[in-house]
Length: 211
Image 1 (cartoon, rainbow, N blue to C red):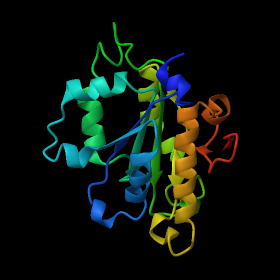
Image 2: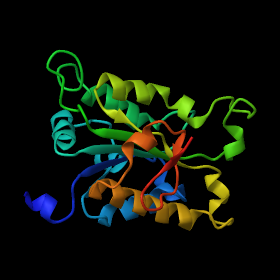
Image 3: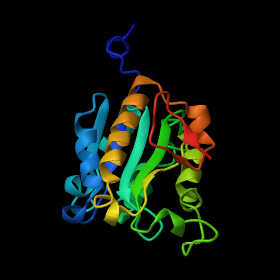
Image 4: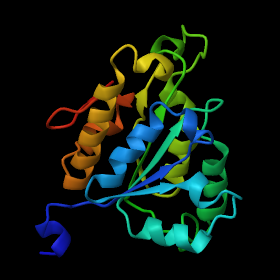
């Protein structure tokens, strides 16, 4: 038995945080603080580490190789990720590393987005003014995961982030985030159930998901 298994840490988790205006963050910054101290989780603040967008490709690829799960932590910007996460994908997920001939470095790893939206949940879907569900909007990331041989999970999301604190929803979401991270590290996430859902839900034990 490895030292990691003996400690109960079955999976290592890489959280890549991207918030271009972190001083205004009401949700992502708090989730980042949680990720900093959960055992088995590595937090990387991409805007702090690469303020000039000069991403160290070899370093990022080494990080990917050494973790079992990858999470993008970010606010939803124009129905996508903040720009540095796109830059990170463009540079780091190279042919021969992440996909294509010999590109097997990411096969079998978990991947999903933990994000917040300013708009309420009712805005996402055929009847809402954003027309698409959040999972629909995540299709480019889902396809990226498929091409790289990763297991894509639905987003873990807090809608209506601007009013979440005043409405008493923020702390519950942060607590659920901590539980989710700990469950992934411990190998308690029901991946088969979660894969087919619309979003990861605030987890109980064992973790589930809703369709």
